[in-house]
Length: 413
Ligand SMILES: *Cc1c(COP(=O)(O)O)cnc(C)c1O
Image (cartoon, rainbow, N blue to C red; front, top):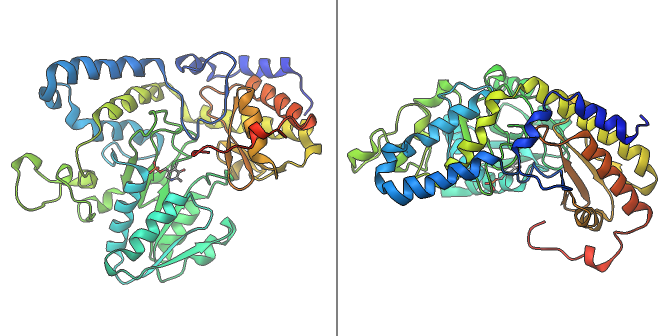
């Protein structure tokens, strides 16, 4: 595909989702391809947070739990996320972090399979998922075995009759590989196990159908494609069939059937609410709530179509313009196996990414050698990708990256 910049601009003019970009705060000149790490702010968010600070906390104080409906935030936000992930409105809550939610749902899953000792995941899964699994597998005298699979194609084989739970991230954070949620879930169920899907790189990036796939549990992030702000609370899904019987160990008062009865022993709330733990971070919750409003107007089919279009365009452009400089495509070439990101490996990936960032093209680096570009379809334009690739080609051709200032690593990469 040989294209000029005008062709990219024409693709943007034909883009059905083009109108959403104006709702995001993206300064002129910035090409932001890192919405899979931290989504940008939308206009309405600041106003909603200001109202929470001034009117609710600042003026009405404790009365706001009822008056401003702070109390129902976890389920209200859950109901807003539900249609993005193919869940019923009462089957999702927003609470805690993705890491903590994984602990809760994995503990719940293991309690449903007490005779089984194997937990399956991928070695390339996001580290916190693996660390949380390890923590729980060893916790309180447990002796669960963690069976890590090296290639996504080998997962089915690892799912044997001794497996209690399978924990997979639908879209791999590094490679962008997308699992077949339906086929793997069926396979896990046929083997008598339960499956937990991490949707950190799915929710808001592509359509998800948890109910259609018959998934057991799911978790995911509020601050990536859902644009809820730094450290935004996470979400958690439990299939309706388990909600009233399963237990989870972080049994705090917000998961109690009647928190304000102040009873001295725990009585789990009905439904998904038993997966809540403590007082929600209200200011972060209202920021996420305001950020979620635009999804009412988004067609997930259009979202996916544009995401695929952006990925294909970027791959073709990089291969055409940068093919001679040693970049290797790490993401699947087939759209059906790929999420909304494209990654290339290069031995100097870190410095190359720093040089790109210095030119206001923001992607990120993932150790050891990956240049990662995330494409949030609501605000990334084809022309952004055209320009990003021209910058990348320039940086590679002139070895601009080969300078001491691009080698220094901060605490967060
Ligand atoms: C980003 C991400 C997380 C983040 O977990 P936190 O608890 O919010 O830090 C977890 N899992 C995956 C797959 C991620 O990509």
